[in-house]
Length: 147
Image (tube, rainbow, N blue to C red; front, side):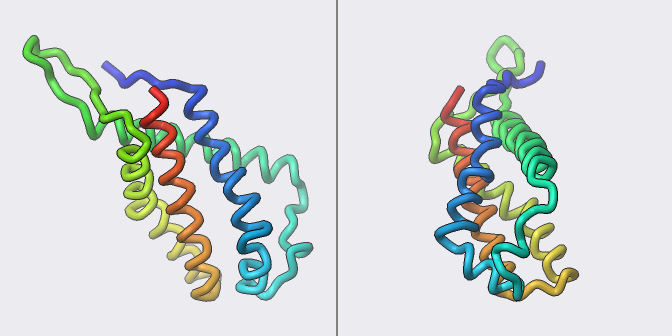
């Protein structure tokens, strides 16, 4: 038995990094983020916008799918009849916790390690870590609340 997936919820959750990123790396922290790399916002624009955003959306979909799988498989159980069932709490708060923990234990170590080898500044690493914690918490919240 596999958990049931709401692919519309997964698709909406996959939009979170795009929408949050447009705000976070734009008007909120865009100048600080660019400065932390010693570049201008113009220099950080993708060469191929469609390819860059298309692939970013694809990997965000994969990430959303994995967060949903993690939530459901963490809360699997067996009923009195011996049947496997999946039963999360299905609240935004609970899903946000799962998303944040997945970020903290899975994505953040990769971001930090990659950033260290790319010789990014501490400020740049902090900005990226906070972004991904927020994005994954919101994604997890959407995925657990939207059954």
